[in-house]
Picture 1 (cartoon, rainbow, N blue to C red):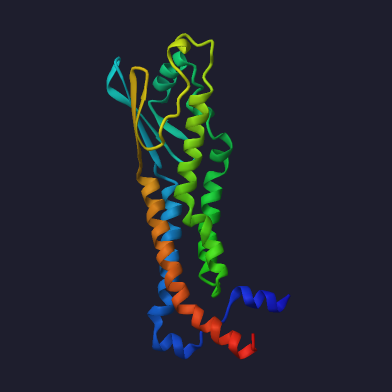
Picture 2: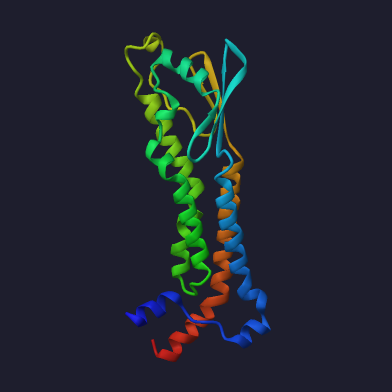
Amino acid sequence: MANQLKDIVGPRVPAEKVRTNPTRYLLPALLFSVAALLLVLSIFFPYWRLTLHAPQYPKGLTVQAYVNRIEGDVREIDGLNHYIGMRPLDEAAAFEKSIAVAGIIGVSLLILAAIFIHSRWAALLALPALLLPVIFLADLQFWLANFGQNLDPTAALSSSVDPFVPPVLGEGIIAQFSTWAVPDVGLWMAVAASLLIAIGLWTHRSAYKPLVDAQLDAEGK
């Protein structure tokens, strides 16, 4: 068990190596720390914004999706969606919204934990945060498709609208309505965090793989 834990944690860095080239070993930690901070701060910003254009709303209606709630012209858009049989927006992703804040804090802590792991296991700890923007968009697309494909057949205008899949990004056309969906500040912060993590993993491998190889050679593995 002790040997397995040692393999996961990886080799410690000799003090003389740190003195000789401190940037080599501090850079991964710095990149991971900034990425974790960006993710935590992203909780306070919207991740996604959708603007709906309808004849009766020439200036458009806009909603912003945070990781745990939806804000904006929700009531007005729900009123329009009601006529074509689409469920209220707040009903989407109830479970995901309930765990989102804790989940993002959790993956941020995993990134910070990766700072102290000097083996390839660091990549596993960083993977959830690295994939967070893709996971968010994929889950959002799932719910958009779910709502668009499961319209209430008893709705007033149900006969004039076929089931549809609103795009998670870009323009969508639904009957006489059009939508425009774009990433918002929070998602861009998560994307920036992913880029920092990717660079951090590369610098982490450059710094610690030679130490791992040397340790394996010393142990005859």
